[in-house]
Length: 106
DNA sequence: AACCTGACTCGCC
DNA sequence: AGGCGAGCCAGGT
Image 1 (cartoon, rainbow, N blue to C red):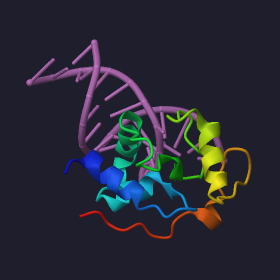
Image 2 (image 1 turned 90 degrees about the horizontal axis):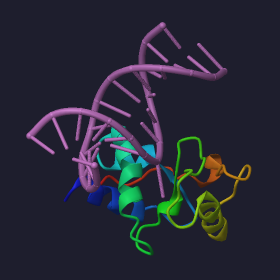
Image 3 (image 1 turned 60 degrees about the vertical axis):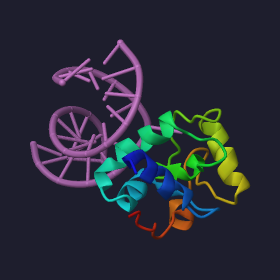
Image 4 (image 1 turned 90 degrees about the vertical axis):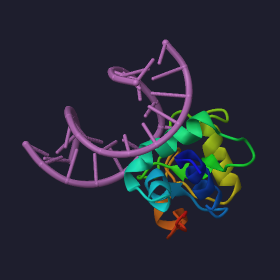
């Protein structure tokens, strides 16, 4: 079980219609400072259709600038399709759609 | 094998 | 309040 695998596991646990921050993923796998690694993990291994990386956003709710499935705009589209609301064109309404607590990965 | 970099976050100035 | 440096892991050069 590598750190990357844990990241993927945590991301898969994000409920549909909600989003999680990189920090929350990092926290779920044991170290909140891994937030950076979380992003890199999804960057190099976006396993399309398996890992819902579009549900992962920055701490302030802004979608990442380099999205693998066709641009940040595509990510926003996917989230909207799941019922996630936005405060503007690129910021998720974190007060309503951010997951309260993400299960710890052991 | 070492060094650099990258979807981030937080603390200090 | 905004800017900068540090800390984390893996892969490429």
